[in-house]
Amino acid sequence: MAKFFTKEHEWVEMDGAQAIVGISEHAAHELGDITFVELPKIGKSVKQFDTLAGIESVKAASDIYAPVSGKVAQVNDKLEDAPELVNQGAESEGWICRLEGVDASELGALLDAAAYAKYLEGL
Amino acid sequence: MFTWRLIDTGPLEGPANMALDEALLNCFDKERSQPLLRLYGWDPPALSVGRFQDAAAALKLELCREEEVPVVRRMTGGGIIYHAQELTYSIVCAPGHIGGAAGVKDGFRRLCAFLLGTYQKLGLEASFAADLNPDGERLGARTTFCFAGKEEFDIVVRGRKIGGNAQRRVNGAILQHGSIPLVSRVQHGLRYLKETAPGAAGAVSLAELGIAVEASQLKRTLVESFQERLGVSLRPHPPTEAELGAAALLETRKYRSASWNLEGRT
Image 1: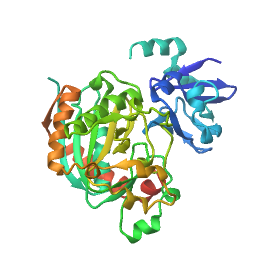
Image 2: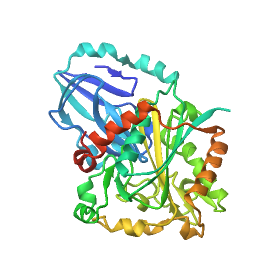
Image 3: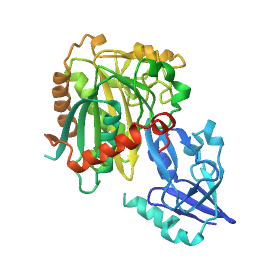
Image 4: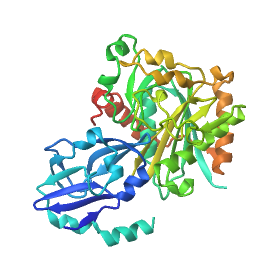
């Protein structure tokens, strides 16, 4: 499945019935050295674009928003001890969590990779 | 010349300070609002903890209660600060107001330049830690106590860190606030920490550097440096009714609640 992006720089990729969520490589680069990721609680329900998690880099605190609605099924607990994984591979091993109960039609409100690349050019 | 707002609220209680900073950020429209610099202080002295810190794990909360030292959680990153005898500032702006610096590190470099200028005007040789660091000291490690660690854009005078700065980024807007210690209260602040913070001995205040300056004089120097470094003019413009109303709500509901201050839950 392809990745879809928000204008706030999160990505989401469907994997069967679940959605894998993270922040984009662009966001990780802009944040600089990531020192902490506040992972969401398993079972937490979020609506699309609500605050899902938190992230800190260089003493800057930012929110991570849910690219789609759903319930947190799994978190990447490797980030508890190694938040730098997000810098190393924001769109791969630095994923944040998996959501279940996702309505795939919400992907329509997001940008595909080409549209996101174009959006970044305009920033 | 582009004009920024200057807000001088004087010293307030910790929860009121943090509520007003958040209200100024929440009411800020990155397209239409004027960016701002706020100057303030803390009365009574208080401890602030970073957005994601575990207050109970880091602080002797019992001792804080006994000695009536308030603990308030900031919405910004970074570590614990004991606020007393300092000049505190906050800035609310968008990347477009600081030359399009969207990245966190670049933002810190641009938004801390006026601090370098302030210290230089006071006759101190101040530099960013990133521009010194000759012996490959590790920068950027996460520390419990703010003044115990060094980030690339922390300011260093005679090899010692002075003050600390932290940011909150929300929907393309930036809030940065930070401290300029007039007199060092680091040792007093360390009493409230559960663990020792060896690096904190490296922190320094203006008084320890032989600079005896009143807060009012320091404010004038800082305003001058801010205008020069950012190439803007500052004009007094106190908080609006809407900002004060938002701050009052945040103070009662968030910054005076134990669930936020101690656990970080809203």
